[in-house]
Each structure stands twice: as C-alpha cells, then as structure tokens.
Image (tube, rainbow, N blue to C red):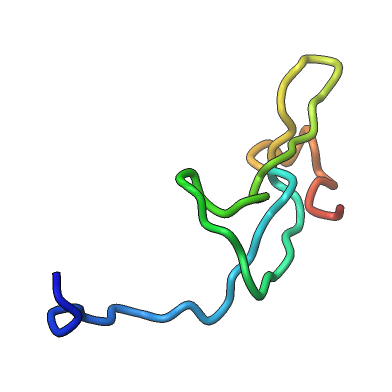
Length: 69
C-alpha cells in the first residue's frame, strides 16, 4: 500500500504497562512492541501458595488488596 492510500484512524495519547498481572501499572513514554504486546507488560504474576492459582483482580473477595500494590 502506498503512503497516499493510508488513512489515520487515531493517535496514541497515553500508554500504560502493567508489569505484574492485576496490579497497578506505569505510564511509559516509549515501549517496544513485540508479537505478543508490549515488552514487560504482564511479565510477572503473584502465585497463591495455598492453591497454586495466579492472583487476579477478577476475584476481589480472595485478593481484596491486590490493586493497592
């Protein structure tokens, strides 16, 4: 496709990365985009030793303070 045929459909005004799944993120000025998303995004997770499951904000009763970190 030539440059003359490209159409702008939007602009990135803010970009956030969440290094630990379901925890607070960080705004980034630059980032490397790879095949599976931003480098460093959701690279880590907390594991509940009691049941071996990954902690998730989808279960706020089990991990109510997850977003506080």
